[in-house]
Length: 313
Image (cartoon, rainbow, N blue to C red; front, side, top):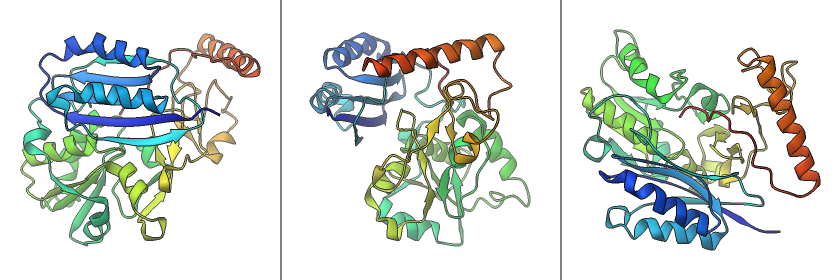
């Protein structure tokens, strides 16, 4: 059985010529048999790719051959099947959309805290712990005592901060704030935003939840549940072991046992979260796609799937 390597990476760095990188990067990935998604913007790069280990390492080496990306860090995980259907390199205004001009993590990001030191920080009663991820991600796992802002997209976080700093709310007195996210990118930008708003003591988990789950023993962990990931693994737990959750092919949300038991769940078509958000024609299309995927699996052939809206980060 072939082994596929997944590599997740990002870096905030000035890339004024980011558009010129699109086609050469895509060509490099395709030549190496690598699939996934990479976002390019003037503020940097953000991506997850997968493929043969040698191919993935070749793409990473190609990226690091650019002096601006020489220090690009990545996280690895292995899988028995390819977690992506195709390779895309997209040009964006931001590599993670906050929607607030002038927030520069290279200048304003909070203090990095290594996973080994994270437990001590968040156990401090004077620290307010904030999960910067979306509501559907928080629903399947988070750190003990973390505040869930109940955002549907990262761009809603500034509005939550404005509400949370009102009198009587958790950020009212500008306390010490610790923030975390899946791989580090959203908490780097969110801590930079908080500092731009006058918060002085702001911390974030270096490497994100994934690095914590990879390096902190489960016996010592303050993490509960699973961590949603934006590929076909759906979720991972301690040691980055796939969590076994199913993905709704319509809205791209992770589905719990309760979700799977819902009368609105139709595999590949709808779930309790999205059954009333698609037309009957769309549902029919999804059902046909599910049939074609089943036929492809029986024939042991790859199926590229239909183009679906990705979950908002």
